Structure formats: C-alpha cells, structure tokens
Length: 457
Image: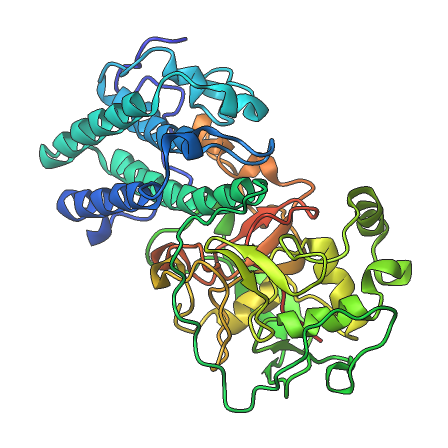
C-alpha cells in the first residue's frame, strides 16, 4: 500500500501513454468529458439487468466478476490520473483489490480469487465509481489535466470499453454454468432476415462421416456461393496510420511483404462448421496442430462452446436458442479454427492480410449497439462485427515497438508471448472502439470470447 503520488512523481509518469494520440480536438476537455460520461454510463447500463449475486460470482480463473470489473475500471482512472493530481484514494485497500496486473504499482489480488471478494459490497463499489467520476469531471472542467493526462483519460475510456465486452463474455460463461440456463436478457431481438438464396439445412444430428450433399466440403470455400476479396500482395504498410486513438501495440506503422491472396467476404457459418463436425472433424488428428489435438483430448471438445450435445441448440445471452445455420460460428478456439480451415482446403489469414482488406472499409457491422448480443446472418458481407476473426499470426511486437516507461508500459507489451491475434470485433464490442488496425489477442485454447473465423487462400 502506497500513499497517493504527487503530480509528476508517480512511477506511471512517462512522455506518452500506451494509447496516446497526438493532441487533437478529441482530447479537448469538454469533448473528453462527454466521452468519459458516455463510456461510464454504458458500463452501468450493461450491469443494470443483473442482481448483486450475478455480479459477485466468478465461473473460471480467466473470467472476472462484474462487480470487480466495475471497480477495476474505476481504479484505473483513480490510479493513473487522479493520483497524479494528488487526490486522496477513496479507500486505501482498493489499490490491491482492484489492480489487475500492474506489478509496478503494487501486488494485485490473485486473479482466480476475485469472486471471493464479497467485501466491499456492490453499493460501496458504486459509490467508488461516483467518487472518481466526480473528481475527474471536475478536473476536466477546471482544465487541470495536462495533454498527457487527457490522453490517459482517453486510454481509460478505451480500457473500459474492453471491459464492457468482457462483462458480457464473462457473464455468458457464468450463466451457462448454471443448470437453469438463465438468460441475461429474456427478450431476444427479431432475427435478421436471411438472404433470398438461403439453403435451409436439416440440423438434426447425424453419426459417422455422412455429410449431406449440399454441405459437402469444397477446397478453399465455405459452402454457400462464396465470394472472396482478392489482393495483389506486394510490400504494404501495416499498423495504425491515424488520426485518432490507438493502443501502443498497433504501432509503429511498418512494411510487410504479402504474397497475392484472397480473403473470404463472410465468416464461416454454423452450417459450414456443422459439416466439419459430421465429417468427424473432432476425431481426425490429421486436421489438428499437435497442441490443438491435445486440447481436444484433454477437454473432450466435440463442438463449439455452448452448443448442445445434439447439435440443435446453443446457449446465448438470451438463453437457449436454436442454432441458426446462417449465422457465423462462434466460440471456437484458434485450434478449432485452424483445423476447420485445413479441412476446408484453405487456411486462416494473417493479421496483415486481414488488415489490408479492411483498411479502407467502413467499420459497419453487428456490434454491441445492435442489441443482438449474438452473431446474426449476413445478407450482405461484412468484415467487422459479429465474431472476432482468428488469424494465423502470433501476437508479437511490430518492428521498432518500445513499451512505455512505468506501469502503463505493462498494458500490452508483456503479453507478447503464447497468444494469437484476432481482428474485426464482435457483437459484444462497442463500435466506436473498433478500427482496422486493432489487435486483440488471446491464448489459442480460449473459447469463451465471441471468436470465429474466415478463410483465406
């Protein structure tokens, strides 16, 4: 436990923050205050349908309770901004309880034990949020924040948007662990209309390797009349090109050599993936990386996470629902995505291939603002939203990347090992949080995120 830092004396001080953009109108105090208030309100709106009991529980070590996330996102603003202004801590013990992994500012409470923190109660966590909000908004109104501290506020807002998605993904895992299969929201939106050429598939389970004729795998294609984005390859620029916010791991912009390739315009659908399952995809070691095959055996995987044993329903944030054959397949690991691509006679794209195709496209798609909270069929192809796209790229530093000094340098750089990159955002991602250069990353076994795939060749 340390005393509040004096302005400029904290170990977090550095010339820029890991998400800092150049000073711009986006960082002017009035506009930044509006963005801050909207972000904080959106988090509380996600928590509004939940009981205190819902917000307390933790279903696995990789997930965090909603109550903890409400406090942790608040701790971020208190630690990295208000402490710099000399504002006393709301509670001295919160520094350890709600630190996630920033070893530079103290030893965090063990991640697997966050669900044991019954104290402080939810009401005190909400008071904590209000306390920090009030102080930060007063500082913005009084123009007391330097450009560097304003950039930290913007970073904190994007950090909180990451936790908004985690609130939904972690909560879904928690609710799915309940035998009652309770819904987060009971009223699901009306499904999006399917395209006129949709082929309705019998979703009843089959055994053995029989695959219906209209679902038989074809090399290099998913199983509707697939369309592809062609790219000529060559030496291209990759990484954040500005203007506006980005995380440090999206920079510096650098050159990459790409061979000519094509990228599927649509993600792989449930009906496509079901054909893989029925063709003994989970029982054929020749399709799998060695680590992936070990994971299949260790966990007993036979379908995506949340699918029923009879392959007819899947658990969603709206409760148990029939599997929509036209919706993108979701909650698959990198290993499953890679095995499917090999089965289909294709491969996963690299992150740079995905970025080159997406770079000049508008960030439109099924994001959290749609209210679906689940992947939906795509009458028109889109690269963003619905499901995160696993890529074949390990999460590594770009050439010339240097983490910042101090605690904020721990934000991204120290995780550049044993992780794979995902691109494009999901139905649980805030739309304003997404851009073509955004690099998400998870271990290859992870399945509780809204992760899917699209093919490349």
